Length: 78
Image (cartoon, rainbow, N blue to C red; front, top):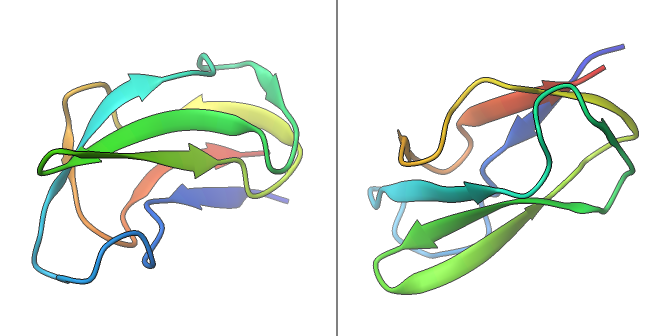
């Protein structure tokens, strides 16, 4: 089963704001555990963390410095 890695919807209030992926802490193809810190995103001057929603192998679909919004899929875990 494939699980999407999404930009969390509850990190900031303004739905129209954009974020930037600043750093992937797990690499493409690596095994990750549910709840593990896998990426960091920046909204204005605030840094937020993205955790793995499931156990499995991470496939990154958005790269460092890509602009994203709430709910965007930035990777998958299978």
